[in-house]
Image (cartoon, rainbow, N blue to C red):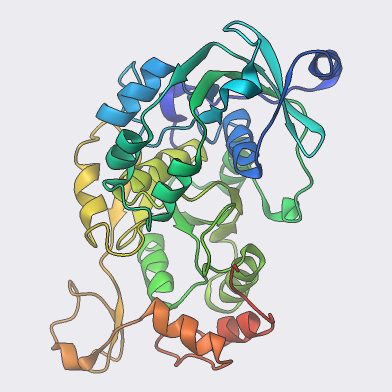
Length: 382
């Protein structure tokens, strides 16, 4: 049985038919606010239920609860604030209770009821969400660039911007139908912003040994410089699935969602989102959603113990390596041999080899995957 949506109901704020026509007409008459592509992605996640139970950007009470307690005001677990920042001059003349149109590149994306306008403390936000105020942290840097005020309220999605990956994007309502059709009762979800190496393959297959199916979701959205480009990740995973997975045990679905690099908090957030897609289990990686050395390698695992009511089972699978004596991939839990027999998989080493046009050794990456990556002139975000 797929998991119930977070909060008990799958949110749907996608407007269609005559109501959409009427709201599009209204969007041309009300004040408009230009939003970034990152906020568009948040709007899509809210409207399609990936962020259930949220129906819009956080109101102040929820925002404060999420910051301090990692829960909404009604005690539902929620760890990452989903906020819309504005400058006072952008909303001059707009008061609480007004409707505004959210525009992206001259297209009305959504209609929003401005239920609240409130101030916020960026430094406090950074400290609580990212556990640091260091501007070298990409999430902190993004926070400090944000505007002075926050506005909260429900949204209605009117139009979706063109998406070159639309053919691979599935939303919660679609994955839930798909899992039902496949007869999957237990689904392990794997979140990624990287191309797959042997360690990723190992943990995915470990999860598959006791679940009916695997949902692999590469994040399609803002990533930091040096991360792999979306199309590279998708093509690399298609190669891995084609050559190394049995037929019909994997659903590969791109997820439109921004990275925050908030480590433990974001690991829980990723689990909540996968619960909305119908997953029953979520693979929590080493230094999940981390960056640099801001978080301990298994710090995210500890945070899950604070959420017994999460409604999705976290899978804690230790980092895999190749053991010469075992003759295959293993973890500290399954391999008794010394460090000198263990060949560790380094993402940095793989990146550097690929930059030089070299195929990494087979204990690190499948050759079919490496060849696909090397077809790109530059596989990395500039």
